[in-house]
Amino acid sequence: MGQKIHPKGFRLGVIEGWESFWYANDQEFGKLLFEDTEIRKYLKNSLYKAGIARILISRKANQIEVDLYTAKPGLIIGKGGKEVAAIREDLTRKFGKAVQLNVHEETNPEASAQLVAENVAGQLERRISFRRAMKQTVSRALRSGAKGIKIMCGGRLDGAEISRSEWYRMGRVPLHTLRAKIDYGFAEAMTLYGKIGVKTWIYKGDVLPTKKKSLDSLDGTRDKFARDKEDVTGGAGSQENKI
Image 1 (cartoon, one colour):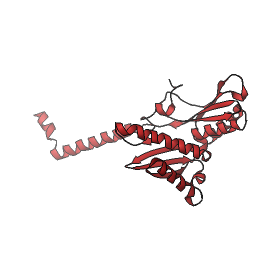
Image 2 (cartoon, helix red, strand yellow):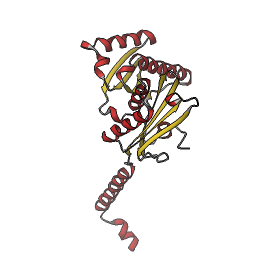
Image 3 (tube, rainbow, N blue to C red):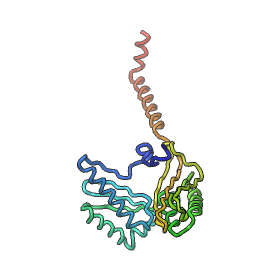
Image 4 (cartoon, rainbow, N blue to C red):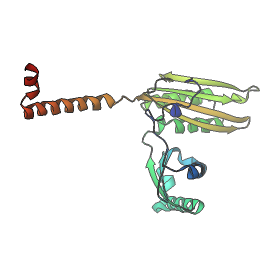
């Protein structure tokens, strides 16, 4: 199962959160979900060169708030903020709602699965050997702090007549461990021989649960409450038991 399922969808509600955060009734849900899809498609196509790692969308009343995490924030913001203002106005005009666009810098692009996949796809389009592209990218990701990485390329690799898939992995990439923080990315390279799909899994360590700690602190609070109650009653309960 871990071989086929989406790593983020598998961990939603456990250690992963949703990339769209809003609430709607049954009549409005489909419409708003379609809007989110169109917003992501528009931003991804128009700002592909900026290297967008994540797009988070939240809604407040009649306002849409979009958080962009990118490796090159300067390309999106532009000189004096002109570019980001133009994008904001275009989105507002297209969807008829006020749009707030927040641009954040991706602090570690070498360990972002989406950016790594797009980087490998770009190398394939420049006719670099897929094996060389995968090995170099894996080495850079491990140097940047990733604990494990796996890259898979599928299609007519090196112009072969029959399509196939090949992968390269270094480090540990757990598939069924729910506490494992797995970043997943996908990109496509348009080559002379057709499209080549690039999938990337990056293991960033385990997310340890904090529930036990909160329960321990709750037990400590209960013990303190019980001791305070005994001090107030003067141990009356124990005297009644003796009688």
